[in-house]
Length: 207
Image (cartoon, rainbow, N blue to C red; front, side, top):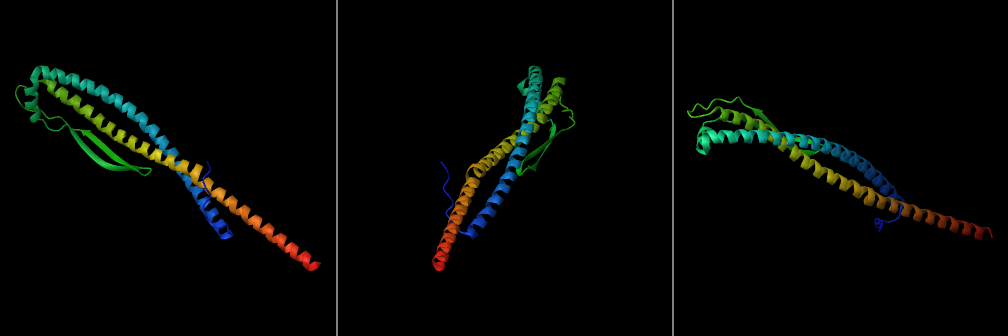
C-alpha cells in the first residue's frame, strides 16, 4: 500500500521546498548506504578474526587445563591454593575506548609479565608450566573479548543503518516524489485552466 502524500498546499514555493528536501534526503540516503557498506565490510572482517581467535583460545585453554590437571595431581587443591597466594599477576591488562564509524567499543591490551618464582617449598615445575599456559590463554581471551564486543556493536549499528536506508528508499523518498509529482500536475492543470480562461476572454473581447 502506497504511503499517503505529504499534507502541504500545492504551491510553487512548497514545490521548490520539497524538491530541496528530497535532494537532501537522497544525499543522506547515499551517505547512509555507504556507511552500511563499510559497516558490513567491518563486520565480515571482525567475524573472520573472531572465528580465528576463538579457535586459538579454545586450543590454548585445552593445553592450559591439561597442564592444570597435572599440577592438581602433584600438588592437590590445597597445595595449588597455597602457592597461588604467593604468585604475582602474569598479565598487565589495559582497556581504552575506541571508535570506528561512530561505533564505540573497548580496546583491550593484555601483555604477558615475566613470571617470578613463588619461592615456596613444595612447589612443582608443573605449577610454573600451568601459569605460563594460563597466561597465554588469558591473552587470547582478552583479544577475543574485544573482538566479540566490537562485532556485536558493529552488527547492531549495521542493522540500524540498514533499517534507515530501507525507510528512506522505500517510504520517505518515494512519498516526497509522489507529492512533488502531484503538486507539479496540480500546478500544470491550474496553468492550463488559466490559459483556457484567458483564451476564452480574448475570444469574447475579440468577438
